[in-house]
Length: 264
Length: 294
Image (tube, each protein chain N blue to C red):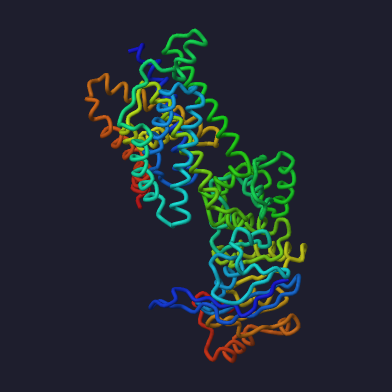
């Protein structure tokens, strides 16, 4: 489903701030794979997801989605294959537009917009049903501006939008990091539900070790722009947090350094 | 006083197209587009040059709209393709248009004396007084273009343009090319501004290369006055507010002139008015936090 070959990316090349964010990264994902990603500060986790999404041009290597080489495709063209939820709850929605308008935009993801109505009456019922499943009371607030929602509600809405029309790849960049623990738990449960329901091929960055072990069927650890540990479902099921830390130390030669990492 | 009311409202309606154009860039796209200072006289130059050659007023206005739209696209290309900051891109187009407008007109000022305009056309065809014709043309163009805007921003492209203003990152992640949306928005905005320029020139009876000075501030004043007085609950509400804001602005100007303010101070007055209106949210926030004891 997703193939990454010899991917590399350097920020600010040739300057004093030069930063090798990714070095020769290789990753193959089967359809329905749900990978959790952990790693230290500046390990390249977000850079990896942003490279897949096409936020910036990559320096070398190839990214293939379903056999299609998207390496040179601009961000908005790749959107047809990719659903994304960001760390910042403000980033995934248009605050000044209504919930139903945001959903309508998401339901047309990857299609070139035309001159037909942005939102058809027939879509409202469908949106209401979808929102009902979130169980946040949003189904009665279709015409509320998204800016009025709480961070958790916005993140749940973004998740709904990202998972609409079953994207080939779902990218989750610490999408619960900015939420309080209770809301984070709720959003994670929803994440699991939609991924399992639609068999979405997903990549989830998390700074929570427990979540990294609890969710997904595969776990990778990154360090200094490389994937240093790659654990499959069977091994992952047996792992504990101390095992993970030991694995990381062995692979990278240093202790896991992430000031936001939660060990429990 | 009362005989001033009707012409003032007519002027407000003609100028409301400028305010609607500025609304598209300032509020919808969230950029301050100074192209309007050039596209307003561009619309005037193009329309007046054509009218002097006895071209039909409707055609002249449409050509002016197209010219204004192209000016907007040039600003958009400077911004998106050459990565020049939006404010500076607008200034560059504005300055360039000064020369372009002189080229179009061949001189700094062209009179429309004795020529057919949109107003004389309505006057003779409907058999109404000239002042009523101005009001009618103002009303018709205002209704026509605001309905067009309401429809357009309700379409998929319109929604994508609005989302581009609110959150470009989000709409890119939804598969929309934000650069194209910006270009379309700037085209639409400056086409409206050019129509405003062409109508104001026809009502003044001449086009002048310097008539664009301060138009951005007039547009902003109308947008802000309208929003403060008449609300922003929905897109439709905002459009109506902006039009009413333009009329209120003209009324305020008429009143202060009547009260004896020298016309030379008008631009200073407008700039101060806009500065106060723009700083209101900040002042209000400070006041509230003081009240809350923070």
